[in-house]
Each structure stands twice: as structure tokens, then as C-alpha cells.
Image 1 (cartoon, one colour):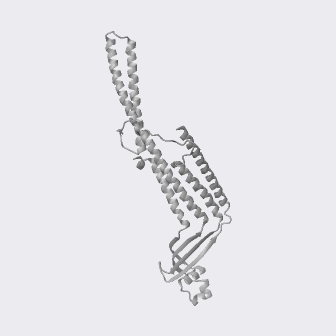
Image 2 (tube, one colour; image 1 turned 90 degrees about the vertical axis):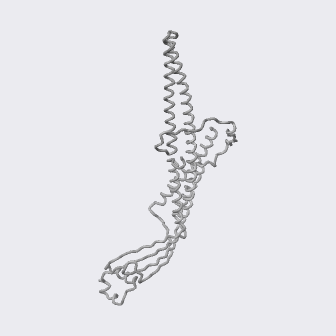
Image 3 (tube, rainbow, N blue to C red; image 1 turned 30 degrees about the vertical axis):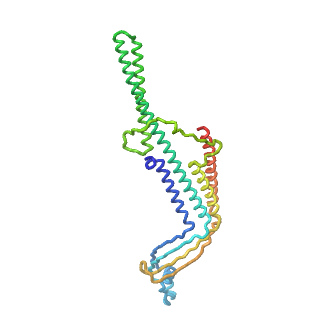
Length: 331
């Protein structure tokens, strides 16, 4: 139930979905982009009219007259365009894809760790509820015994066989045990609420455990724990390892912004005076080399941010390694 309903697990699962989406988005560094558009224009601008008539293939000798060139009549042009763009070399986008892949692995291990953590908390809460019910049963027996004892002392006091101090002592003892019973009932309610919260249960009034706390010898775990090594196979450490890897590749992604980009493109167009008309077709192919030499210190700022983020992530990973070794030794 917790695996399906627990809020922390649902959040971690959503974060994994987001990382998978970012990794999917990273494929745009390699795959083509195809765009279909339909444009409308009506104008009497001489340049626009001149170009539209050429594109529609309706330019005539009369259109070369000076008056026709300077004062053309308005023209309507619909342009149906299919444009294909193919990345060739985009170093920053390539590193961005590898960074997104590592971030996805980090989210996968983070989800694993969250599920492990919640599973442990569920077991602790469940057996805490078992223990609390056992305590209440024991206290109920004590309350019965104390009430019986008080009745006997009261009867003896009425016959003058015991002092008033003995009667008052019996009353105090009974009150203490009844107070312990109220505390035990409150503890059951608190542990039950905690368990219902972990399981994501709403509208359930009571959880009744069916297990006991009896442990036989064969259920005990005996294992040799290497205290001098870091438990690198733990999901939380693996999540931080891949987060560190993603941050490092993010630095290279920012460095790649200084490297020229090379992309190819091709378009085919239909121009007509009617929407989606196909009276005239023209095409264009080409290659674009683009180099962002200076963008107002934006590249420097993004690179510095990436370096700082990578340094922080690396420090978090090393801290987690040291802390995990300490926790293993303490445990």
C-alpha cells in the first residue's frame, strides 16, 4: 500500500518521470526537427509584392514598368512550408544529453532509496503498533488486579483491619495504572495514525495488527559487516554518484557553448493566392555554421554556475560516503 500511496514515494516517482522526460528531450541533439507551417500575407509594399509574384510564378513583363514597380496593387500570398532541420555538431547539446542520462539514473536510485526508507518506516510503525497493543493488554491486566486489590483494601478498611494510609496508597496505585492505560491508548492512536499516513490510508478508523513480537533463534541474522569500507551499493549513494556525474557533464555542456555549431536544413514551399494552394513549389537546402563569440558574459556566468553546482554535488557525495561509513560503524 505504501509503495502505491505514500506521498514521498509518489514525489520521488514524479521526479523520476521528470528526469526521464529531460533525458527524452536530450535526443534533440541528434534527431531531426520537422516543422509544417501555413502563412498568410496581404500587402501593397513594393518589395513584398515583387517577391510574392516571383514566388507564385506570376511575374510578367508589365510588372517591370516603373509605375507598377513603385505603386503595385495589393497581393495575397499563402505560403505552405515544410522545414527539416538536422543537427550535425552541437557539442553543448551532446553533453546535455549525457548529463540528462546520468540525472535519470540518479532519480531511479533515489526512488529505490525512498521505497526502502518507507518500507523500513512502515515495518517499524507496524511492529510499534503490535508492541503498543501488547502493552495495553498488559496494563489492562494490571488495572483489573489493582481494582481487585483496592476493593479488598477498601473492605478491610471498612472493617477496621487496615489504616487509612493503606487505603490511600491503594487508590494512588490504581490511579497511576489507569493513567498508564490512557497513555497506552494514546500511544496506540499515534502509532496507528503514523502507519495510516505512511500507507496513504484515508477514512480508516483503526488498524488491527495480526502479528506478534515472538522471534525464534533461526530468524536471527548473522552477517560479517566490513566496517572499513564504504557501502557504495546503497541506493542513496548511487543516486548521489550519478548526480555528481550529471553535474560534471553539465560543466562540459556549458564549455561546449564556446564551440561552433553546425546544422543542416532544408525547406520546400508552396505559394499561392489561396490557402494550401500548390500552384508554385520552391525548395532550399543549406548548412549553417554558427559561433557565439560573445553574449554579454552569459556563457561565463552559466559556466561558473555549473562549476559551483558540480563542486557542491561532489562534496555532497563525499560527505554521504563518510557519513554512511560512520553510520555503519555506529549501528
